[in-house]
Every structure is written in C-alpha cells, then in structure tokens.
Amino acid sequence: MLAKRIIPCLDVSEGRVVKGVKFVQLRDAGDPVELAAFYDREGADELTFLDITASAQKRYIIIDIVRKVAEKVFIPFTVGGGISDTDMIKEILKSGADKVSINTAAIKDPELIKKASDKFGSQCIVVAIDAKKNSDLSADKAGKPSWEVYVNGGRTPTGIDAVEWAKKAESLGAGEILLTSMDKDGTKEGYDIELTKAISSSVKIPVIASGGAGTLEHIYEALTRGAADAALLASCLHYGEFRIKEIKEFLTRKGIPVRL
Image 1 (tube, rainbow, N blue to C red):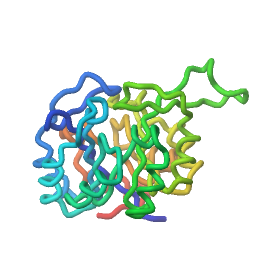
Image 2: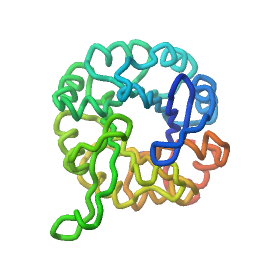
Image 3: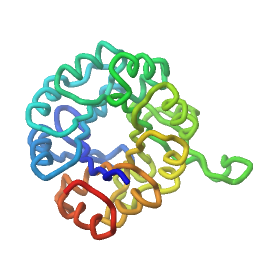
C-alpha cells in the first residue's frame, strides 16, 4: 500500500488564510506564507493553496503570494482558484507550484482538463469537486444517495452528479481528485464517508478527502472506510488542535502507512 498523505489546506481570501463552516462564516487563520513555511517544517506531505474567491469575483489568482509560498516550501504544492486556461496554468507552474487545481472552469469547459493534462502532464492536474448531498427524495431508484457538484466557491449548483463528474474528469486526463463535502466542511463532525467511498470506488486516480475533520479517528476513517489516498486538513491544524506529527503517529499505530 502506498503511503497515505496528510495535506494542510490554505483557503486564501483577501491575502489571508480563512476558514469557515459549510463555505460561509469565514474567520481569519493567519498569513499564508508563514503558515506554509510552518507546515513544511512540521512534516506535511504536500500543501494546497486555494484562492477561494477568485472564481466568484472573476479575477486573477493572487500570483505574488503563490511565488512567496513556493519560495518557503520544499514539498509538493498545489494551487487553485480562478484558473481558467492553459496560459494561467503555465504561469502558476512557473511561479513554483507543482500542481494546479481546477474546478469551476473545468465544469464550464471539460476539455480544459484534456488540454491541460496533454500539455503539462496529468500528474499536475487536480480536479476539485465541491459536492453537496441531494435530499433523500432525490435518491435514485435503488435508494442510493447522490451528490450535486457546486462551483464558484460553493455558491452555484450545477445539476451535475458528483460521481459521474469524477469519472468524466478521470477520462479526460485528471491525475487526482480533490473532493470536498460541502455538508461537512468546517463542522468537525467527520468526513462524508459515503461520498468519499462513492468517488474513490468509481475512479482509479488518487482521491483527497476534504471537509469535516475534527478528531484523529475521522482522518483514519477517511483513509480506510472512505478509501481516500490523502486527507486534507484546515481548521484543526490552523487553530492548533492537532500537530501533523501527532496525526501521523496515530495513523502509524493504526497500521496506516505514512511518511514519518
């Protein structure tokens, strides 16, 4: 089994790291450059930087902060937010990112995934999926739950099924799925295991579970029952509830391979 990854997430708005609950009620969590350097020292496996208002505000990603973060970290670094074409991807990669995360633009133009993976390699193209569970009334005939994809930082429903979209993204060349449960985001009630498992079992590429970590056991469940390849973490790290070393030592005791 490949080592599971622990990935801090920096949700950036107005140049500051923020964290909310279910994509709203944002509160300040610190300076992105300082936090990035801290997590690099702490032993994070990767780092994800998301400019969470770029798409909704239809503006360019904060490239100067991307450069400053890239100078401070020596681990794989993913950047997302408002990325809409291959020229922008090229600039972000030249600024020091190892991967880019695309969400809204990929829904609007799925061929962007193929163009980007053909040009830069699928290993650096992450498709982010923000998904919200449909009501029980809209479950399929077999009674299985379903989830809808949202874009523009969780503001806009698309009517697209999350599992089907994940499969399509993989077929177009995505190298990884960053899956966020909007229902669980920031709640600390645990990841949406049903959603994570549904996506993980439908694709062969790695799936990063995001949204809801509140205990060490939640992380373990996402990596085992949810079959995720990595766990994305924000508030529980930003506000000092856990240290990365503590998480990895817990997972090791549970028999989960991690990089110590």
